[in-house]
Length: 423
Image 1 (cartoon, rainbow, N blue to C red):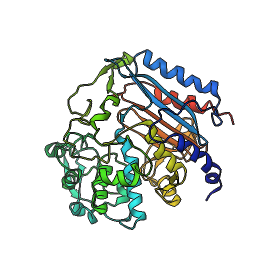
Image 2: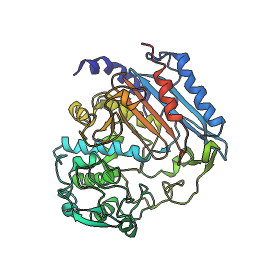
Image 3: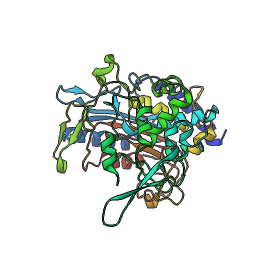
Image 4: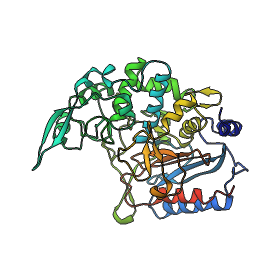
């Protein structure tokens, strides 16, 4: 075991005990774990102000540093219209933060010998044996050509498969097939059937040539189902949610937990407040997570969770693949997931992409507080997370705002967390 893991394992075990299930009932933790208490309270002031100024309905922020809860704050309201206060056990739609869990699932299957990330997707979904690409023509339109090679599972993990969200050059064909956008909760077909239909549609780029954010992780979810012989929901429950004690993470919410579901709001232009989104099952709505068909387990954006549940996933990764004596992955699998795999493929300045996460490569080029080797991602409903191995820092921030407009809450949270480090 590496020295850093040895130093943190006892502290991580203590924290994971505190975090069993939701965060309710933790109480005040006296040791802030190397973060200055007074400086941390700037976070409370800032977050409360966003709710008071009606820029956010509310949210939950959880920070762990060197294995101890250093900051936790539920602010604002879970539902503005009913004046329901936000609580730490509130359940949020986490959208693309689902991708990390599916990526972990793929690595579990590799460790069990049921797949290799170098395998072609067609090994599990035969329709992907002969994919095509839409190539723009001068003067407009496009040609459809055969892909230069087959898509691999690694291409899907790194979003270099070429498959976007159906909004590229061949948008007309994707719209005709009824497959556009990341929202799947209202689909009345299993995700495997949707993924198989995607294979017949033109991709936006050849495999391995570009970073194209899109349906790759939904396709991975269908591969997980084929390789495991279970639905994605059942597989994640058996291999991740259950072992990590994540009782409030679901694709579709049980009726008993509906009162804890946070309401979705949209930002008005120019920071002029927020408004409740519609109840209809569309991308910018409350979604069909309670009364939908409950058939499509979207690996790309389908889950709901709590800050406490998601923290346990990240603590497992930070701790080299295990938590509470339960090993989910080997340390080497975690290492492979959390390094850049894009090489020379353009991404964001100062960053690369691993097997499910954005990876910080150059703090100066990225232009924000953090550390080389930091990894994380976010979700369409304006939630975010990151793990900073160098500082042994884990952050989970959940709120429900789509579109988010020009609000600067995530940047402020990052700045105020890092300014509090005093050790």
